Each structure stands twice: as structure tokens, then as C-alpha cells.
Image 1 (cartoon, rainbow, N blue to C red):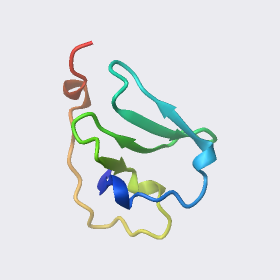
Image 2 (image 1 turned 60 degrees about the horizontal axis):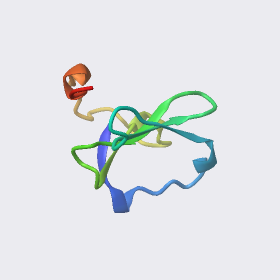
Image 3 (image 1 turned 180 degrees about the vertical axis):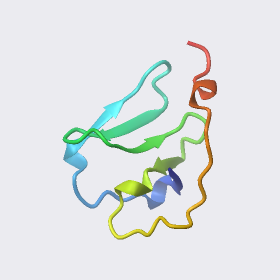
Image 4 (image 1 turned 45 degrees about the horizontal axis):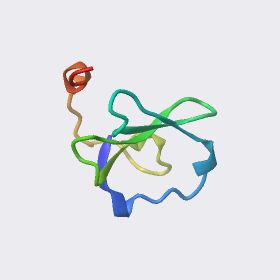
Length: 80
């Protein structure tokens, strides 16, 4: 995922194929492709003015050398 300011994210095609998934407080938004199921991007509760974009979904973007870090997703869930 690559952090992108909300104003900079532009969906050029396929917006009609996106499916929104939310849970718990329904503040965070997680978008998936309704055709193949890939996780395309999300808006976090803690940074609602940014999107996390799955750069593997972007055409013609070399990903070699992009920093990678592990994230403990379970710890980010918060109370239910």
C-alpha cells in the first residue's frame, strides 16, 4: 500500500466495478474489485484524508526497490 492524499487519487476507469467493504464503526472504507476480488485501496480511520493504494494494481509502475514493511493488522482492529 502506498499512502496517497485524498485529493490526488483519481480512478481513471473501472470505478463501477469496485465493491466497498466496511465493518465495526464503518469509518474505514476498503475497496475491492468485484470481478477478481483484489484489494485495490482503502481509507483508514486514523488518516481519513488519505488512501492506501495497492501499487500492484497500477499499470506500468516498477515496484522494484519500493520499501516493504510488515504490519500487524490484528493489532489495528481496535475494540469491537
